[in-house]
Amino acid sequence: MCGIVGVVSNAPVNQLIYDALLLLQHRGQDAAGIVTQQERKFFMHKAKGMVRDVFRTRNMRSLPGNCGLGQVRYPTAGNAFSEEEAQPFYVNAPFGIVLVHNGNLTNAQALKSELFLTDHRHINTDSDSEVLLNVLAHEIDRTTRGSELNVQDLFNAVRNVHKRVKGSYAVIALIAGHGLLAFRDPFGIRPLCLGHSDDNIVVASESVALEGTSHQFTRNVEPGEAVFVDLQGKVHAQQCADAPRLNPCIFEYVYLARPDSVMDNISVYQARLNLGESLAKRVISTVPPNEIDVVIPIPESSRPSAAQLAQLLGLPYREGFVKNRYVGRTFIMPGQSVRKKSVRQKLNVIASEFKGRNVLLVDDSIVRGTTSKEIVQMARDAGARKVYMASAAPPVRFPNVYGIDMPTSSELVAHNRSIEEIRQIIGCDALIYQDVDAMKKAVGSLNNKISGFDASCFDGVYVTGDINSDDIERLNASRIAGEESHEDSSRLALPNPAE
Image (tube, rainbow, N blue to C red; front, top):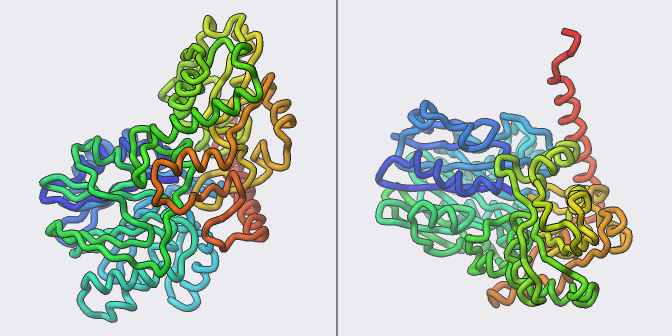
């Protein structure tokens, strides 16, 4: 999961891209990067850290030009962070292209071999985004055959990219001296939308990046579609996939996206209200409402679901946890030890809301169970008589291969465990999960044009159709190796107390 934005304007874009990245910061806190273009020259700055830390005044001054793109990143598949893997990525031929990518390619290793053996292109990092950039560059080179670039050549190149690349990808690329190209995988797994103002055309991961920078939402980029914005601001679009269908990642609505975004014509906030309504029915069948004194959300994504649940059950809704906003989202922190350490730094209890009460804690999802176990204990330490836990999402039982950082089965508390076994691990008095079909119905009812969802982490169905057990084992091994490498490098970086 990453956040991406691209802009074509008749005025300098560095501040606008910076502002948009701040609005997308929730999608990645590991690294940030911006590239701008002026007179066919690219100017780039990228580094590890949050947007506000990566870009200082001197960096912003070194990013001139009226078009550009940016990205906030967090690593997928457990890869240890390397600063050279921060985006954007650049390749000098053909024309000069820079690219940002949100998603995860499931055939990246095979493509890397093809690029080396057949296309004679060198990949210098372990990033699948660099692979994707080189596939795109090669296909543009093939379609133009040394001639001047035209829009149809670009669309033909994207069509060929769709034929070669598997997995999830929302892409924005800047082509030196020509304009901005954006496209989305044929399943529309990762979001991408288009907006405008009098001066600008903007492409971004979420609508909040448009509205928060005073732009009007124009439309979503469709699955398989390519959009090209030339340097004069004219928008060209064409469907480049043979059989596109809209299967967005349902975890975007459950957790990843901001509640004030609208994605594929679905309000994220309304989706979470619907999930709370559906969850209320599950709670009634497990714990009688008269045995619950108060409903307390676990900040922040669960608040709409918890509020709707409390209203339907006629129970008081209270804020029982205060969040330290200067600690990152624990779900997207690399390394289990870092996540464990940060839970109590991230949340503090309001003891008066727990003491002597039976509390129903509502979370958006339960992935590893580490955070849930800590929070249940915090509630007990604050004097709660009984602690019930409800999840607005179903059990996360399967690895995700489309860009969410939870690929290994061993990390998932629900994998190969019953609800009772999970309850015992978390330590709550009752555990209530959302139903998979009810979740799909709750979100899908908001847009009847959606043919289905990627809900693979809940139901084990991978919409791209190219994932088998061998692929999962390979991804598991890659993640474990990546985390071991990260831990080793962290130990090496520690000062020697004897020195």
